[in-house]
Length: 485
Ligand code: ADP
Ligand code: LRH
Image 1: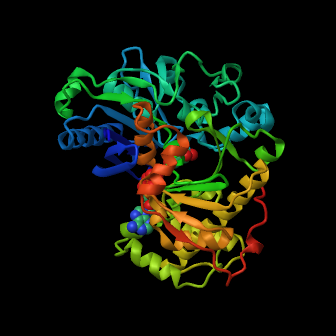
Image 2: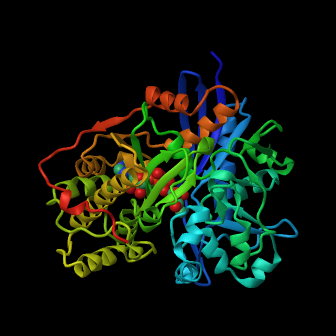
Image 3: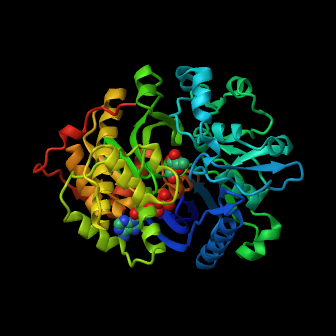
């Protein structure tokens, strides 16, 4: 049968990869042809992404993909949400994109909430209140920079622009800005004007799957492209791509896309914009085929990544697999913190911040490294379980199984604890769900795979998935009351 080749560029907050995939109606195979670290840089006190290094990684990866597959004609790009670059009249990027964990947005969300009231912004955008949403970053922008900008491009659109020169805003990621009207499917122009932000910088919104354009002639040599390679706007929000590749075979599933963040929720046909939903801070982000990703951000593995980074910087020899084994032998549910605490968002000093959160909550303070890691794992499993329950309650849906995908699905301790805490079977894998979702949107656009359910069935039939059944030796219920806000 027919085989379709495509490349997926998937940039996460901790690393980027370029994947070469081969898709047939009954098979999907892939190789990670290039992997690179994503290391933020601090310049004059502000935390930025290193755009040049990321673009370099993408170009190197595409060259590797092209040399492995000379017939390669299609590539899609996805990255983390909310962040953007500003483009000036001369078509050049104005400065490096700022990292969403930078402190420039401190206090801005609170003042907007006070001014507009929670329900106005939520009623239009359906987005959860996160201090780094694009709208608050724009309100924190340097006024001169904003005045000279002619367009705002979200990270995947910015990379597409660098490769093709085409300007646009892919829909799934546009929905994460808190400037997108989730009911009407367009920029929330009235709201944006009311906030005093310029609407002229907002590019036209593209539907997922729409072709963006060919690689610029000046880049073809470096990529080894003969002019055939087309950049396609896939579900460019990484979480939207990950959800598209959840290997669910029936309704009634929740998903956890687990990497730097855990994105925990369910798929719906239409947004839930109720007062209970805003109180629980659930988001209604757009998925493939106009679906709604009804979910909440839980801290994810960021605190673990940051602890490891701190310990290594201190000169300690740490290995993730050894740490997780040792954490598994620590007593359960001893030190527990709120997995959605804003104190966990910024970088640096993570072990001491975790110890302080335990102390402030009157819980035993974890001293050893395995105890700190156990605290993160137990707290994350609780965050997962509460959020799955909240999603089911607020949407009126039943959840029978939890799919855990992303880099974090390799963490067997976390998968088991999530099964225990939710009381539901957890299906762990695939690890590269985001890249697979990216490939599947391209394969669907090429007519190789039919629909959303067929795409998921293909993942379920071809990718390794490990099942974890809940154990009942520990009572998690005291930890699982609905999330207070
Ligand atoms: P992002 O896309 O946000 O950069 P990933 O989906 O790549 O994140 O997931 C990265 C995380 O996956 C790491 O923080 C790490 O905790 C986890 N991880 C990666 N490899 C392993 C492994 N072999 N065992 C357990 N966890 C792992
Ligand atoms: C995960 C993610 C998530 C966003 C965050 C900023 O990579 O895209 O969905 O909330 O990054």
